[in-house]
Length: 360
Image (cartoon, rainbow, N blue to C red; front, side):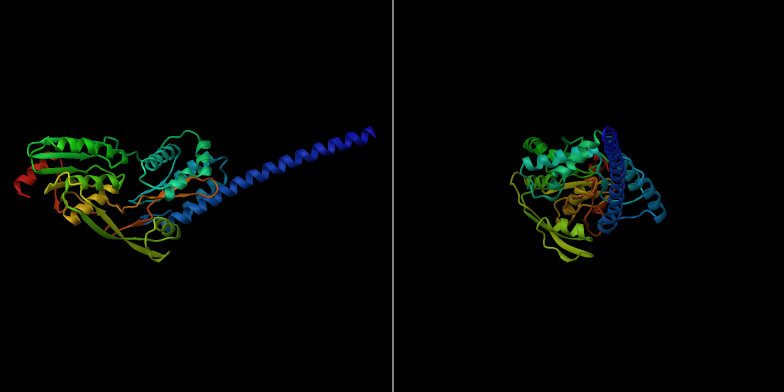
């Protein structure tokens, strides 16, 4: 009996070892399958929903990275390989894999937007960022090095320069709203009639900022309409989440974007000049296009980098790892904005001289 008990005990222990071993193999395979499915989902969702891709990876390149993804040992390794693969795509618009540092930065931006009651908790991107599984995934990834382009944080500079009052917006980050009070205060003591707004190095942010600026500087109300187009199932669902009346199917859809701005009746400047350049992008491009189309400002400088649509880039999470992907769900044609007056030398003094000399 003693031998029988010992044999049973050894048998149970052996079964436990085999079970643990097989469970480990299943877990490893499950992780590998999850990484592969996320990789394939990434390719499909990007190539069927991104508004504009100039170049996509070849099948050979996709196979090379599939092999790498299959051998990933953890989520950090998968994220690094996916980011490496991402650089095989080329686009002029918004398109990024959200790394760890960028996630926490964007997460805080959207929390602030909720706190300031500028968006609702039903906002698509807010819900993606606040999703517990997404948050937990980025928390487990730990601290990382951001590869995404950081916002230009120089803020706003404003000053009198002879007969001009100059406002230099280096970014339309939502925090720039706090600078409008300073601009308003300094304009109270300005006795000239010419305003220069420089967005030549402004790579975007929030349309809320420039719309508020327009309502301060102009005594007129504005309504501006433009046609926006897109394609893809996820892109269409994203646009519809804003209760926008979308026309068309997933393969190709469109809608009319309408911007309404009511004057705050603080000032009524008639001579407003907007300087744009080849770095003027996203929300800054939207401002340039609005200014040129409505006559709010005389637009001077270089053709913009484009991609201002009025909608924030869409966030999507990969099903297994919950890594976030950011891309343009929609766009407009033409994609860039051309100034009314083309000028290569767009430093403030040169533009001022150009305005005076040509009596613009």
